[in-house]
Image (cartoon, rainbow, N blue to C red):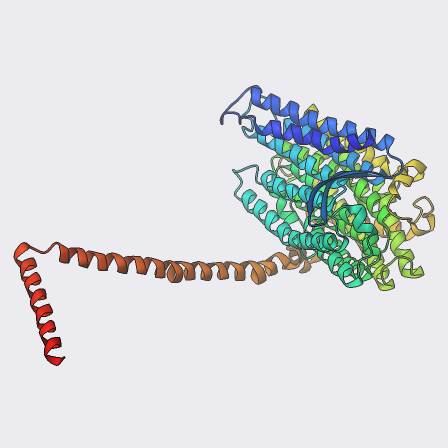
Length: 637
């Protein structure tokens, strides 16, 4: 029964998504009321996500010890590809988080994907494919979660990439949306090439792609290190790690509910989860963990520094996701997969809350720019308090969820630095710990800045009358505020921690009291700096204190421009040269031969079309020449 539930987990939203794709779009320009196709799409989307959540909860209740079922799908000369599921407490917890966020996004989108806040305005005529693509996205992530075979995991991994492309580009009216979707697709594909090669190396080495077989096989050190490094390329793409992080902030061109889905429960979480799934391999490849630690530290600080100078509300949250992903991968680098997963779960709750609350703000004021907001605390009290909880959890304010999970990461890094625990070299622990502490200060600063700029002070658009969102948008935000506030307390509940430690023994999250003092001091310092800058001039941006560094941080150290110069332009130039060579060289040669043949044929045709007197003269001349030649040959012989 547990195996059947595991198989049903991705199948339920998959069926809902496939049925939804059969629905026709609503006629463009449709107004008041819900069309039949839209109503059916809403029903399928919500039912698929709710069904997946129900199955995930049943699995969470049932799964104790790891459960695995598999059957051979393809046997390629002894190299087996299987169909099956691999279930444990970690998979069940992540599945619950994915399904819960997907359900919140489906319900929230019903009201958000209208052209305005009232029921009598034009509706989004492409809602049916949108809801279906969310279901497929959810199914793909759940397939990654429960898959017992690396090839099956790869299928879910790649379907997520396709769905992200479609969903980011949903609003075709925005010129930046298709470009952002293409960028996300291509950048993540670059990493996926390495991911595919890493899976191939492990499968060929083990003689099977079944995860249990791959983990149990005694791989050679060289193959294992190479495979883990290749897998990290895919993780860097999906989980937005340096240097493949540039797609994630641009993906904000998609609808805000999709931003919540990508940033909280799918796509970016897939890379972190994949490493925990294969973590026993990484513990035997310390070089790979050292590389991961360096990338995590850079990503953590890069995202935090970039977030301090953004004016776009969604981009602040996007860069904060990049930074928080650095905490997760940093925990993996220092040998604390349970701490990484705990932060993944709490981050899913508070980041989904923040993005949906941001969508409510954007829905009310019609802009994403913090410089045009202000004073929303009085007119949007529900959104304000939910955002306050989300930002507090993001910054690590005790006793909110982010405090416990982030402190678990810092405690693991501190132990790796001072005690040498963990499979990676000691310097990796120092690097992750120091970067994490600085990240606490920066996170508190930009979270406080966002709160003050958006909700305090005087309104900067006085002609608007913002208000809290309608019920379909308000209830998902309110419900997500509960785990964002309280999920961290699950660290004190043994059944939760036992499931979370299904991958490896980890630092005990309950006994971290001595380690929390320094992070709390840094938290207060960061929040105080932002508040002091705002207090001096509430109309000005606290980020002005950065001085000449502000544009550098706002452009994320211009790494995107560097990538464009070093990669995009040369590739585009090479493509132009190749196209010119193909058109002028290959096509020119083929077309030249064709033109020459046509010209020769035309000349011969002209000769054949000669008038009768000229043709007769030509025949007689030919006969005369033949006779003359025969005579000359006879005389010579």
